[in-house]
Amino acid sequence: MSTTTPISQENIVVGEVANGLPLTIPVYRIKGDGSGPSVYVQANMHGAEVQGNAVIFQLLEQLKCLKLKGDITLVPYANPIGCNQKSGEFTLGRFDPITGTNWNRMYHCNSNLAVQFAEQYADADDHTLKSAFKAALIDEVDQQLTGPAYRLTTGKRIALNLQKLAHQADIVLDLHTGPISSQHLYCPDYAKASASYFNIPHVLFIPNDFDGAMDEASFCPWWQLTDALAKQGREFAVQVEAFTVELGSQEKIDLSAAFDDANSILSYLNHKQVLLDAPHLPKAITRYGCNLNDYLAYYAPMGGMVEYIAPLGGHIKAGEPIAKVLRMERYLSEQPLQTLTLDCDAIAILHFASASVNQGTELYKFFTNVFEL
Image 1 (cartoon, helix red, strand yellow):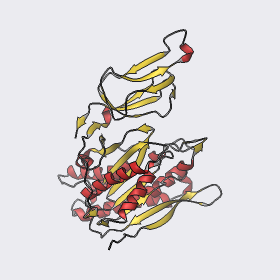
Image 2 (cartoon, one colour):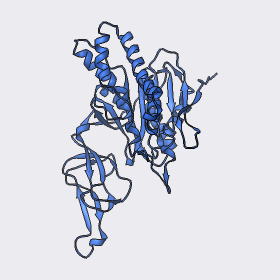
Image 3 (cartoon, helix red, strand yellow):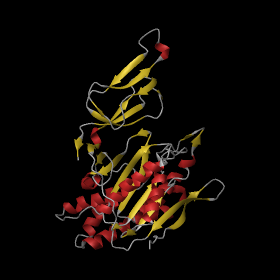
Image 4 (cartoon, one colour):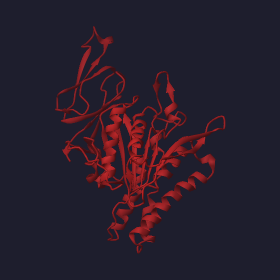
């Protein structure tokens, strides 16, 4: 007789809207037996990036039929303002319309905390150190949330409430999509071994630098603590793994692809011993890596109407055409159709959503200096 693992739901308040009513987000929780690492998954921080909601649905559909060792918390619609930020038929929601700040650049990280803890807990055992540091991270977020309300923007308040949930976990997955994009994974350098357990062919390795994003806010403090302790001659593994999972393109959901994406995540969680007796294993695919400083942004050298030629996920050779730019106002004065090329070998990862571009628009992102994992 099959059993179903219970799922609980809580709607947490992350702010107030103009009529004074609460702004809430749904939080789903599934309890494990306490013997495995805890997990936090969120989606749709950017308004148009909706595929993550479908992935959370497919995760819930499978998780309720699995036995769990670790607790799992899942948050769809992480930014209820962003996903309702429409302009005609398009969803905006990448930037706070009031401040202009990227919704995914408002999290908190105190780089001094790790140094303080390395000194204060120099003689503590690993378990005590981990518990105390996790509590301190949560307390820092709490202090900001309970401080003077006038100090927090709408976006900062949403981000801090999400971050408080994330800091309680050992594994953090932030689900995103690109404009028009292939699947790829943002992976901290120290977690390279884990990248091969996702069914994602393209992996971008990022350093211990905080730029405001959820994955960085989750792993940077722990990485900094590891580094601080290493300077004292103590080995202490980074205790949290956090990834940004780029699921594809924005403004659409695909439930079939979401099922595959959910299996990819479950393969990783199975590797991390979050699941008990689960069948999920990584696919035998070739995975390609790129370091962040080799992640090339290609900006439009001219304005015009663009036909994107380089296939996403495709390997491009130096000198091959990647796009054509049509400039009809130049039809009689010069060649109206210009071909754009790249001067190095690369993998095309994503491109701009519109065919209409100004000079200087980011047309493509490319992996360069690629290596196999």
